[in-house]
Amino acid sequence: MSELTDLYQEMILDHNRNPRNFQELAGANRILEGFNPLCGDRLKIFIKSDGPAILEISFLGSGCALSKASSSLMTIAVKGKSREEVQGLYEKFHAMVTGQKKKEDLGKLNVFSGVSEFPVRVKCATLPWHTLLAALEGKDETVSTEAPEEALHSGTGFADERGGG
Image 1: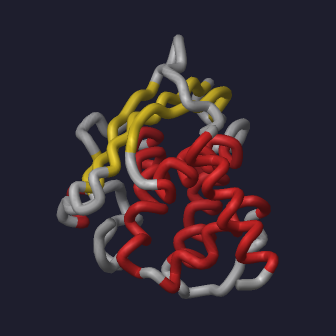
Image 2: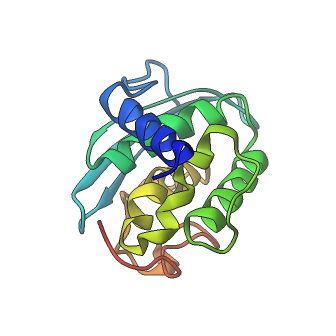
């Protein structure tokens, strides 16, 4: 294994063991749950926004190291961003973890670049993103990785993600 791969693995394990923004957010005006039944990942995203921008974001939940680390790093990456900026980050992240692009300019989110080598884990890494985007769209039903694409938020369904957890 390369030193970079080792560093990425260590960062994922650190964010799994010590997730950032892992708490209920008082005053959240958007709350939504996500579920990956194939892996057992369950999470709840809490967002405090002023309309166009995410002022605060946090999450609670349990699941595999990838889903928890992805949730943790996502909350750091999207704080202060607009819905359009979040959508752009998601599209780059999704392209990277599905192998459509090798690496993107995503800062610490690049630790998930190796997920594309394990298609069965893509849903674990993207569940928090799908849940966040659905919450920003005002959805109130639990996001499931196994829901039909039309039941998910517009244009970012799980239909193009293979495997489970």
